[in-house]
Each structure stands twice: as C-alpha cells, then as structure tokens.
Image (cartoon, rainbow, N blue to C red; front, side, top):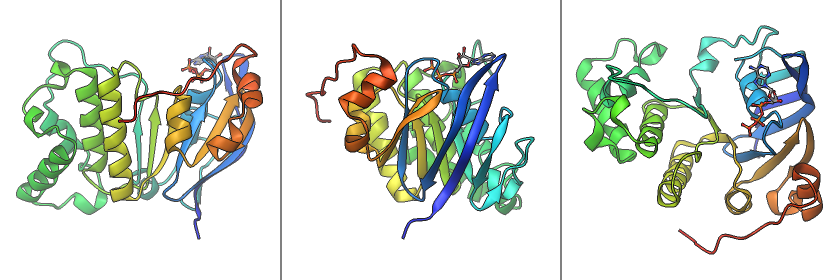
Length: 255
Ligand SMILES: Nc1ncnc2c1ncn2[C@@H]1O[C@H](COP(=O)(O)OP(=O)(O)OP(=O)(O)O)[C@@H](O)[C@H]1O
C-alpha cells in the first residue's frame, strides 16, 4: 500500500500584500506523479516554493518523509538531500565557468554518504548519470554554452547522480520545442520508474497530464479540483479553473 512522501494541510501563502495560496491540502503518495495545473498567477510556483521551504507560509503544516517542516521552512539535511528541484527559469550568462561534468559532480558534494568517496568513484557516478540522460557528449561544455533542452537534461543528470525520493519540477517544458518536450518527458518517465521517484510537476499541458499523471491538483489560489486526471479534469472543472471559454484539444501525436 502506498504511503505519503509529502503531506500539506491547510497551507496559506502570501506574496506581497496578496494571498497567493489559500487553505490548500493534499498528499503526494510514494512513487506517484502529481501534476499541478492552473492559470497564470494561480499560485502554483508559490505553492511549490513553500513546500520546499524556499518562501515562508502564513499557516498550514507541511510534512515531508515523516518530518514536519518548521515555521521558518527548515528541514534537516538528511531530508533535504533526498529532494531535487528543477526551477522554471535558470540561465547562465556569458562564460559562466562551470562545465557540465563539474555541475553534475556538485550533486555529490555536501552529501553525507559521498563525502569520503574516491575521485575515481565520483567520476564513474557522474559519467553514468550523463550517459543515462544522453548528455555524456556535452560533459566538457560550459553550462552557458547549452541550449534550453540540453540544460534540462543536464539538470536531470544532476538529479540522478545520487538517490533521491522527491523530484519537484516547475514548468520544465517551458521553452522546449515539440521533439525536445517529448524526449524530455520520455526520459523523465523512464527515470522516475527506475529511481522510484515521487514527482510533483507544474504543467500547462492538460493533454499530457491526462495521459501520464496519477493525480492532478487544479489550483486557482484555492484548490478547485483534485484526483485522478480524467475524473477530476471535467470540462466544468476546467471552466472553473481557466474561465468559461476554455476548449480542450487532444494532441494527435503519440510519441
Ligand atoms: N516575489 C513576489 N512578490 C510579490 N508577489 C508575487 C511574487 N511572486 C509572485 N507574486 C504574485 O503571487 C501570485 C502567484 O504567483 P505564482 O508565480 O505563484 O503563480 P503561478 O501559478 O506559478 O503563475 P505562472 O503560471 O504564471 O508561472 C501572482 O499574483 C503573482 O503576481
């Protein structure tokens, strides 16, 4: 039977003077895929940032892997190092002097079980992660020299270089073309199964959510719907979320 990796109860978050997330409760079950959907400005990134302890919350309880997050957003290192986060935007301008290999290797630094690891072992782990994400040929390139799609696959290599339990992704498809999106989704799906990750991801692709997620959370400041996507995302619920003029199209492409 599945157990909760994360549990959120009555979470309220403010951004500036406004309430961005209002009294939201949900659970993320182990090894499940949960999509967080909703219109622009609905509070999705705020919810995720608060779940990760990156921004404060006004009220509510957050428990991750059995440990309750304190009011200041603190979680012990033993829990934090089991979580991975790929943010919505990241770019490396100019000649940011960090190679792909060095970046992925950083995923091992500061991790208790790898601190005394020999250099040769570290290299094997990094190379294996790069191979599994089709980024081995990029290992000597600077991060600032990568395309958006390449950078996202390198972020996945960073996530798998050591075991994690919870992966949080904020609109990873943003800026990717159709083939890159399909390639990334396929890779993520396979890695999730191999690694046993619990995934929470923000998405604007309702068709993809219907096809691949176990649970959907429909947010528009408050939680408007929640459950198995094809039951929860009815046209009525989509209208509540996005407004009455929403029309849902099914992608014809099955990649
Ligand atoms: N740093 C900030 N300071 C003040 N208000 C903010 C800040 N960041 C976000 N907000 C506001 O909080 C609300 C929720 O924003 P948030 O980014 O969480 O929404 P979102 O659902 O992730 O949107 P999008 O789909 O456009 O990325 C919005 O009204 C936004 O203007």
